[in-house]
Each structure stands twice: as C-alpha cells, then as structure tokens.
Image 1 (tube, rainbow, N blue to C red):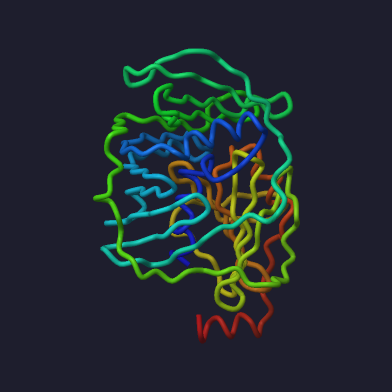
Image 2: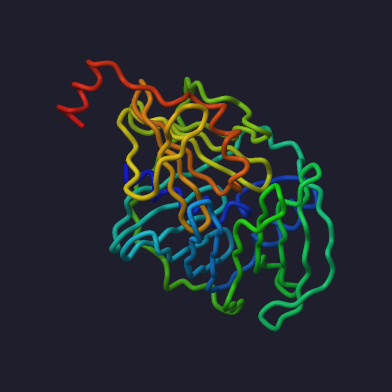
Length: 308
C-alpha cells in the first residue's frame, strides 16, 4: 500500500488549486490557475506528533503543475487541475484524473480582504477565509501575476496548523525541465460504483468515486478549500511511520507529513485509509462518519496470510 499513501501527496500540497468554493474564493483560485512560474516552497506544519516540514520545488505552466517532492528518493509528482501522476526514478508509477460531478460544494467560506502586503519583495494582497465563526486560512496572492505565494491554515482555536510560502518565485520560467516520464496507467472512473461512502461528511461533499482494481475504491471530498480522500482496499493499508491514535474506543494508525495527515485501519472487507490536508480538529468528525476498525473473520485472515 505504499503506492496509495504516496500517491495522494499532491492533494495536500495543491488542494486549494483543485477545489471550488464561494464566488470570491473561486475568483482568487481561478487567477492562480492561469499563472506560469517556477518556485521553491517551504511547508511547515505543527501537528499533534510534532513539527513536520519540507521544501518542494514547483513548476507551473497553464493547467500543468509539477512538484519535486521529498516523499521518496527521486520522487516526482505532476498534476493538472483535477489529476496527477506519481513517478520515481524516471518511471511513472500511477496516475489519476479527478473529475467532479455536476454539483459543487456549497459556499462555506467568507472571504475577507486583509489589504496590501509584500512577499519576496513583491507587492501582494492578503485574504482571510472564514468558515462559520472560525478563521481557517490566510492566503497571499502576488499582485502582478495573481499567483498564490503563501498560505497559512489554522485550527479551531486559532493556532497555526500549516504554513506554505514561496522562498523563490520566477514567473518567467515555467520549469519544463521537471517534466516526468510518460506512459502512466490511469485510474478511471467506473460507472456505476457501488459504495458505502457518504455523500457528505462534516460539511465536505463527495465530488466523485473511483474504482481501480476490483475492491480498490477511492472517494474525493472537498468543502471548497480543504479536501481529503478516502480509500477502501481489499488488503490492509500499512503505515510504516506514525503511531496509534485512540478515538471512540478504537485504534487507528496515524502519520503526519508536511501538509497532510494519513489515518489507516483494518476493516472486515480489507483496509481503510483517509489522507487529507484538514486541520486536526476536523479529523474526528471525518472518522466518525466512516466504518470503524473491525477485525476480519478467520477465513479472511487465512486468505491474507496466504496471499497478502
């Protein structure tokens, strides 16, 4: 299951550019989509398990984005709005195209203009995203290009969860040298997909459901800014890092990496996992809406011991 857990890194890094929300937020994110540039970005997150940080290199040209990520040795992720590919050592491991259905998330965020600021010696404008009475994010956009050059997300009590900021920014270079290999295998939407995934979880709407190999299912949720993916697999989802998180009388395996959190647990049908960029105070609401950890019956345990 390492492929599963690595694959979703780009969702966390770039989720704001892949979702839609209130009209004002839509306009801000739309201007960011049209920018070509290369940049280095620092990601630093204060998690319940300690600080997680990294530096990534981003290249954007039109709808194509390439992220040289520290997920693993020679790892590279390429994405356009609504899809991504993962490659290692020059070979593409997997790819996916996420297509939202006809409905979009209800506008949950109020956008407040914080006024002029500066970043990297450039004129910029800052905005605040408010959901209900909670300030959830602060976004900084470059005035000249419209690129989103800094993002800070907050927990419910107002403390900082993750900061993402450019430490270099070159709008004259789309960074085509980061283009990965071709020939990927695409995970395609299966019609219809029978699934027990809820249509809505804690204000996050299910945008689509995908099925890869038999029994491997994926659902993508967004509230207009944050997003997460839910996986249902025929085999156990293993996390080599992280620790045990106790919630609701059950044990989940949990790991934090820069910009994302992953939960994994065993279910009667196989394995479950949740990967997303949500602040920690929203995690329990998501877990509550999903099947709880269960021990498989003796026949399934025997099958796994023999065939994995």
